[in-house]
Image 1 (tube, rainbow over the protein chains, first blue to last red):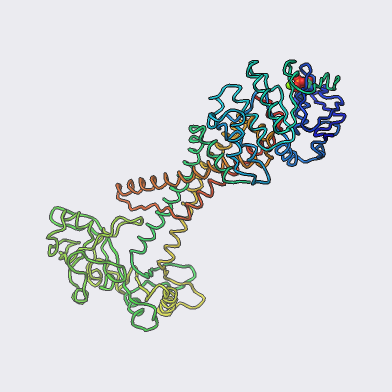
Image 2: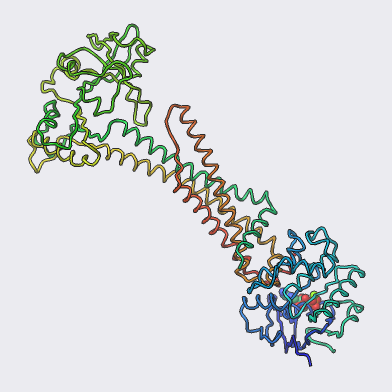
Length: 227
Length: 410
Ligand SMILES: Nc1ncnc2c1ncn2[C@@H]1O[C@H](COP(=O)(O)OP(=O)(O)O)[C@@H](O)[C@H]1O
Ligand SMILES: [Mg+2]
């Protein structure tokens, strides 16, 4: 039996907007097994991004527990959380979020720059290998504005993989792409899951994309609707 | 973490907006250049004054008359006082003594005339007061003995009376109702910060007594006695030896004040350098304000830069940057602006100092602005500190950004 990489229980996230409270998550519980590919679907405003930010340790829940790859993360300090993000989490954003001034290779190397225990090979070589794997061997030294959306998202995927994270969190990774490049990005992610066994959690609005995954988690009003 | 990478990243980021970086640096460049060149002017003025004081003679001590309420019978300095300093044997630290009398007269040669200072001296005046003749000779013992009507002219006087300096020796000039033969011309000492010594005429002291100074001067009163000490270490002992000889000659009791004042060159240079020191601090202080303004410029631009790069900061945090990493990143950028701006400022200061030197020379002042290694260190250190201090606030704002909020901004 495979172990749980992600285990959240009774997650509550409340935003205080002046006098009103916005409950983005209202007691959400779920778990994800190592190597699983999961789609998260739900209407806009249902709390998908809030969940992803919590799973990625970018944000702390108001209450609830979260165990990521055996580590109890809700009790951690800011610096420890930064290290957890660095080691355990790879983010893929809808808008790619590449550094516009730097080349593809430099973008992929960025997480290595913040790695605390250095010395797992030459960062540049690791980045180049990953870029080759995502099909950008002839775009290594291109800057983001010299690449198409699909190519930029490939750079972001390489960046997410560079530290061999336990989970990859992709919040609408194909949302800015046409259906053809969206399909290519999904195929790439699924292929990487196959090869490396990396756990994938993908937020999407597209049922065709969700159909490619092993399991779909539906979220409504900050809770898991059904599985 | 890899500080080389931090540095490289900061440089790349600064290079990505060259115009803005250059304008931000400009504030620091101007500030450092102003501080350095202003203090250099102060230092240059100080050393030009010091060297002109020193050019008046080596290990020099001046004695002149003073008046005090606490002295029942003040007396003037006389030739006999001057002689006593060398002859009594009571002043082993004294090398040579040169009494002098001054007066002011109109001097005439042909159709030309000029009003100038006449100084009556003994031959030792040349060594004590560092006077050399460019042509001819100085006043001799024989001139003193014979009350000769001979004169040694300062170079400005030569210009005024003759226009040229050739064929001047042997000419006769009229001072009062007597004709004096020109026997020598003094080496020009150049314009100094404390007035020119080229505008004077030197005559034998005996001639001055008998023909130029007031008849009432029966006791051979002198205006000043210049003394040179044996060496620079014996200046203090020379001063106390002179003091005790003159006090006993003037019959001053132990509870009375001196009726003379002794001024060593050292006290003059000390006084001058304390004045120029204040000047230097004042100029440097004004210039330092412009450096502070440059620092505010750094803070301003770094704040803009933090806002512009909010999303980048969010991303860096998402991939594992700690707050300190972000702090370091922005601090490094403002440090680099401070450091490079400071270094360029040093180069500019050298240019300014050269310019000021030329302007001073063109108006025949000798001012040599001195940029010392110490002042470079201070100015660059100050500009780096400005970069640090004014970089802290923007950098800590960047470091404290919430990653989720930061990523959400466009
Ligand atoms: N920083 C915030 N401050 C206030 N309300 C927020 C904030 N972030 C999200 N919300 C609210 O929380 C709810 C869930 O948002 P989100 O997780 O982004 O939904 P989704 O990604 O499913 O569209 C929404 O009602 C949204 O307005
Ligand atoms: Mg969303």
